Length: 620
Image (tube, rainbow, N blue to C red; front, side, top):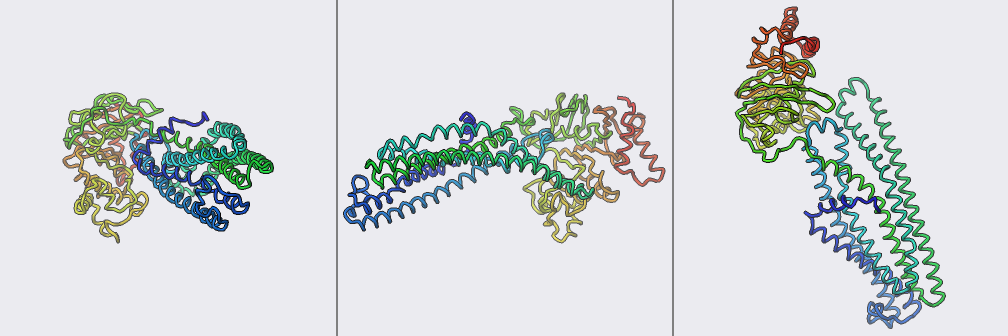
């Protein structure tokens, strides 16, 4: 049984601690059920030996029958009633045990899934960049019951072992040779279980990986539904899902066949043992060493002994599934989040918003020098514009401030304090973010705005919506603030979703604001509405605004120009134009298009300009 990971078993048992009383009750019911099971064959013995064979009762049987000892009809009635009482007792204990075990199973599963969910949220964005969401979902949903499943096998194993010991002890007192003969199958069962357990784990791991990949395909396809429909790739995605799931099904069938063959081997071993005991018992009856009733009791006990032996074999075999699930879930729980509170991290109250980047170096896994030696200062209340070609590191630069990632070199100061020395929760309370793609939950409009501050009242939500120029379109909806947005806010337009994101930022009221191209995907009219709201939002806040449209940076106190991960220029708009570098080239290119009659410069056009000028020589 070396395949049983006892460290995982011991670690799993700790999930019982909050439910010690319920677990103790379950253990007591297990003992009582085992004792009650010992009474099951005795009414049959009384009927055969003392009612039909007319043998006088003695010992424990005489005590059971009591005053009916000399009355055959009375003994028959006592045996029948006793059988019903034993059946009722076993059924009642089963109901109570099932109730206790179900509560234990559900509460432990809830606790473990919650722990997995919390751990997944603790992990950094870099971790989630490397992992597929579908696999995390599969782990939480499909493997989250592994500890409860393992714990719930303990009462079954304990009941089987107790029943085995009790019945074997009684069988020995009736006919020791029969009892010993019944144990002849144990070595074969032990070897079979060990052989199965050591050879099934790799196949189960393969099945788990294939099944989780199937869920990942579903999650990815549903997330990309608009793209799938737009390109008419429904059949392609269906074939991809079908192929992946067929592989998982084939692997599962192969494992199930092996599990069924194992069950067949166990059944045949116990069947041979039962046949041997039956033959030997009948021979002893013929010799007069046993009565027919005694033989029936022994046969019943032996059959009952094999039942727990089979249960133990099946349970240990099926536990391999649990062990595979436990191993993968414990691997997630054992991961140390790479972004976490430093020892002695302190809580920061409301910050002034003075931000300093000192010699920042950063690289993604598999990519070097995403950011190289970035240094600049943003005083409280200043607006900092950030421009540069695609891949220059603009979004990465602002993502380091709330510690979505940590730099590999240098440091970031907020009001003179290194952000690594602040608690994550208090640091992120200082930052509001409005992204290029407005991310909304499927709940109501009010719930999405309230996400900025969960204790906000209705009046505060309405005030935030008005400040974000969202109140009017909300009131025009049939359900107004109770409108359910659906998946990713599909019930409203992109510009309306962005205004709700701005309202959410208003409600949070953080001193530092990050705007990551918030108007790049909307039309000019909607852009004007959003920019009007953003100007109110930026008032009194330190703002970092990433933009491809240079016209949106006219109010910036300083503009940072990034190229290939380096800060190649910084200064006011007029200073950068006079400098004649990359920013000047971008500015001239946009004005040239404007003079040719282009009404505004689209995000795609600006992006193309940036990529064209990406390799331009610019002064550092």
